[in-house]
Image 1 (cartoon, rainbow, N blue to C red):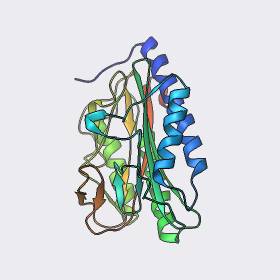
Image 2: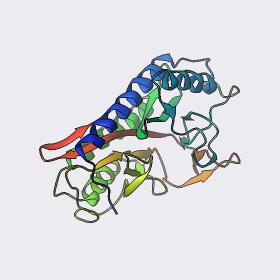
Image 3: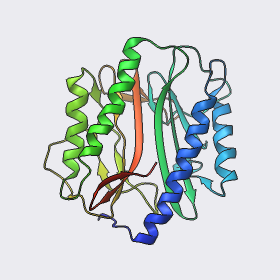
Image 4: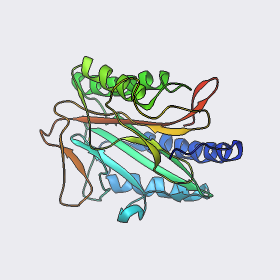
Length: 247
């Protein structure tokens, strides 16, 4: 069952979304070669707490950190570590969530560490542009499948693949709510989009094959072929006047 938000709930969700955006911006600006992913986690944790919020990921289903930091062939859920160092040419994906007074914000983005290859830059660009394609379809009367199809078709037209194992989702009083928002699908299928829905749209794109495996830590998802991947997530409110990005 989808969750249609009230005006008051939307205002509270806006605050949580804004906090997630502020914290991500600070974390991404700190990224440089030679720093550990644990340092990024510490920065994010302090920034979230300073905004009278809680790290939504910390302890969620047993997850041991405040944010996810995934490098190169790691798609999602990379656990920050003092021994995991960023180096020139890496792609690093930061995914973070906040709980502010019972409402959630969720956001993710892949960025370069210093100079990266042209192919890595293309992967990042296509991932972002696939979100833009999806955003255009997040309108009242459209369906989840229209969002999914727009991501998949754009990504595949550019020679990459979309994951099947993870997806976007509704968000509000819970971090993950209905409906699921896959990165693949058929236009015109799935749940109809209705005013008051808030969804997290998150293209997850692989340079090669989309199939993944989970590392021995039980969390980190990596590409089977060890090729690069990228991730972009934003929260979108469905309104009668079109979609609105909240963070």
